[in-house]
Amino acid sequence: NVFFTFSFGNKVWNHNRMLGETGGTLDANRVLLASQLDRWTTPGQITDVPRLTDANYSRQENSRFLEDGSYVRLRSVTLGYTFPAGISSKIGISKLRVYASGTNLLLFTKYTGADPESNIGQDNIQGYDYGVPPQPRAFQFGLNLTL
Image 1 (tube, rainbow, N blue to C red):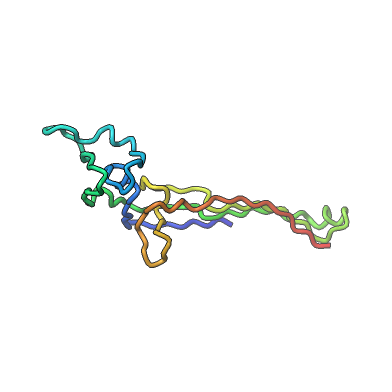
Image 2: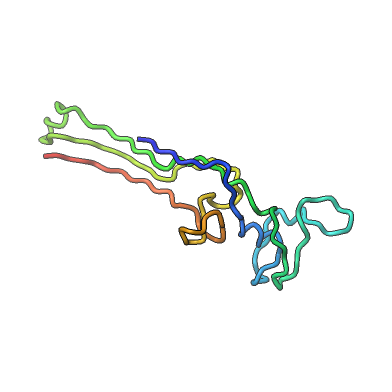
């Protein structure tokens, strides 16, 4: 079994990127992103990265941080093998199956945040990425025996 999910054309507000690129945070000790090395510093300078603001949270939200949230995700894969009855009966088992499965194995996206499916922990606020960790990747292995 293989299960993919996808979304195309949606936008995600990358609040984490906005905080990391503007410097205008409630906590002046926040680490800035590497893109700040290209920020605007002098009049006449040509760059698409705005200047830093001070730590009193006086920055401006704008569409710069509204990103394409399109993605294709390999949500789950399950691979299994059921041994022929002739083999399993030789060891006193009527049915023997081994399997492996995984969830959230691959994500294809141009979104720069951790996960384009993020929200702020509330189902009714989608498309707003503010410190929510990405979905966990998990692996399972198993053995089904019927005596």
